[in-house]
Length: 484
Image (cartoon, rainbow, N blue to C red; front, side):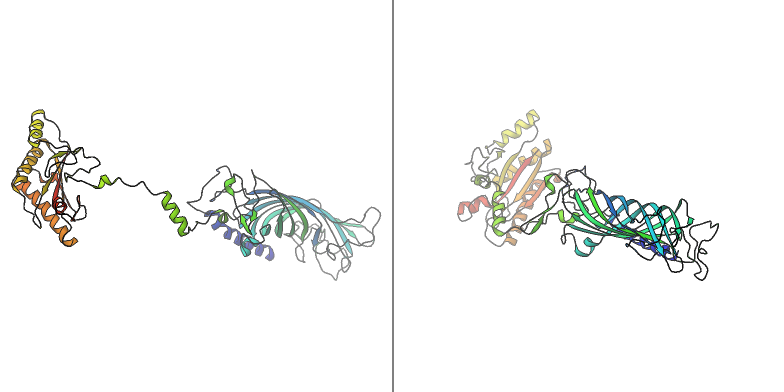
């Protein structure tokens, strides 16, 4: 029982190691989840199920064990012919992640063994067992996903049940000594499974297993006191198969295995220029037995300078029409939209740059109750001054009157020419904007100062060439934009 407890602890430890991998599937937000019908919920979909068939010689380890795979030599009557021991079975495999999986096994076979010393007997028996085991991909764990790419080496441990019957015979005359009848007991299977990927559907391999049982009676013989006469090893009226003075029995096999990988549209990776070339975008599925989902993530391409230049040119927006950046007449409307690009300086214009008779516009708005429309105007300044000239004062009074009556808003933007430093020009443009706002409030009678929006840009937004005197004059301005 001590060995069984240790094996159960080993199995529990292996299961705990697998849990983090199962609870936290690989995630890659930038990876395309290109096919929702597959069965593995990772960054790419992969097939995970397979079924295996195996066949090979079985072997027994217990009281009546003297030879393993060698034929048991005995003197028998004609009713007991020489024959080898063999087993076969099926395995259903589920790959839970690249490193961890599970397998459900069912095997049927026969066992034989004998021992001359002390026992002078042999036995023959049949068994059927089922078990569930967890697997660990040793090759992937130790060597990674791309070395020995076609190979898969798993270690596994689990728990199951064995159903058996056996008969013990005297080795000298072949006399039947004892029969177990139909019995069953717990087993702890441990083993090593080696597979090679032949095609996208078929693997071939070897499976080596040792089943640790909770019984000392699989050979129809209990271990006992060797000083007693032969036959004393049979404890009469035994109520359980677990009693005996010797170690518990074990049995196992070494077998050839063929595996069929289940799933739709299987893919098998191939080498291109010495590297494994994965192409899940072709619409198929690689199998999780051989493919770590991490290798399906395409690394980001590092562009060369030439490639970056080519991409930049391909995505370069169309050049801006230079007329959008020019305002030749300084009325606040760019030449591209200006219907009258030669308006006199200081003119009141509409959104299309057309000169308006502001007095007529105000009278019409008051008479008809019309809502405010976008109207542009400029207040011009002398060099390094923020004093409002008399010709602009009357215009500002009319603007304040219209704002009070119709609820219009006003956007002010201060500008300078390019002379002086940027810091000085920013401060000067702010003083000019403040001067206009204060005039509207204190002199023109604007009742709601919150309707005035203020900004200032120094010399960073010229509307004319500052290399010329006329250009310097046009750039010294405060733009007015009347808004609904």
